[in-house]
Image (cartoon, rainbow, N blue to C red; front, side, top):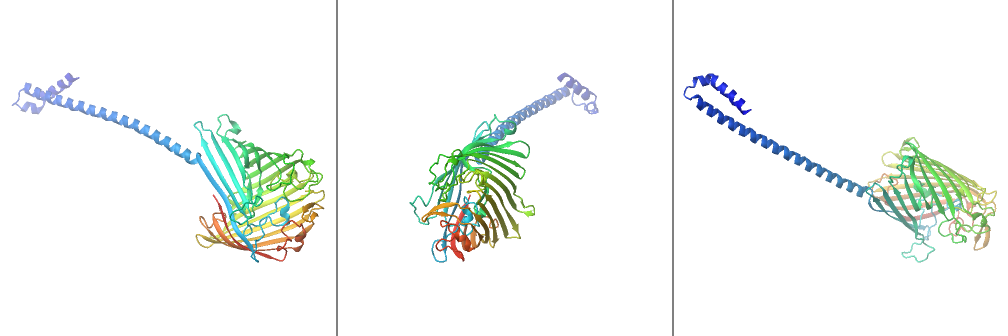
Length: 520
């Protein structure tokens, strides 16, 4: 290669006009100069090639280094994302506390379940604004764990306590009931699951069912399923159809039902909960072996009522619900939820299926519950709700209980941290216990058939942080004045309920107070 180049250069040099005219140098001298130039050129070319090779090597090394760094950054990012989203400790809480006094300066009476109709397993609630005097607390702790194979676990526990005593230190166990309300473990991300169970997860323990929902403004559950058991969530039968299946066991009644001597009776409930787009269909069957043998005993619910001679041991329940988180009944921006519920036997308690052991084997109940939130103008939100129920053969053959509760709450935001709250409630009752009896200080008494209405009006100047325009935003501190009145006939229903008791009779009563409420 070098010889060819030299040869070409010699030819050009010998036959160029400049070389012909340049007679001062001999041919040999010119060849020497040419060879020197070629050597210099070759040296520079070699140096350039060397520099190019070094640059290419450095570029390759840099690329590898960048690749390693990118992978390290990606790994750290993923770890941070996991720690932020799924791993680590959780803490949440709900609390309300406040003072309630009447126009005479004494402790006020009230609460969402104040009316005679609410004696039906604490179901018929009115508006709670400016009408509560209890101190109630829920503290929830949890831990999420994610593992290298993609599986995960979630642990949660909730401790709750409620007390109506306003003292700073309460030692009377009848005044408060600290309790572990939830204690369960969830697991998912199993490689063994496939098909419809690909994204499903399992759980076991004591818990509130995931698909429960309520009307906060009346402290009334539309659906509350709970107890101790196990189940599976998120079984996907299609793009928009999924199911949840569970078994719960629970005793009858709530805290305070210590008159239920046979507390080994346990109601076992089997539930299939399906959702399709915004629709929910819930079906439950239940059995409580031995419950029908407990005749002529006082109530399992703490109401002092006596049980019938045909108490149920089985029951069934169904609910069809529609959830719209974007629209107020399809009319405007907002949200709404509606449920139609039906049950028989032990399932005739529609609010908390399986919680009332006093129901007869022929008990039937149908219930409608609905509420919505509607933002209007720039600073108003409206929240109407309705709950209505018909039940028959509930606690005695031939009894009948009809009631409807309407509530309307409005929020008017005035500044970034101040709003005015308004609430109006009306409840109608037509209650025929048909001879149901109960225990009292005066001996055995009979519930009286009554018919009439109850109403409540509340005005509450409220301070809050966060989004003052959101009617459900918390925390908030509110001052309130509440006026209540009802038909006099309702005072006759029972000696052991609030209506007709000393200082709380028909004719109108005022309550005043202050309350704080928070959840996070």
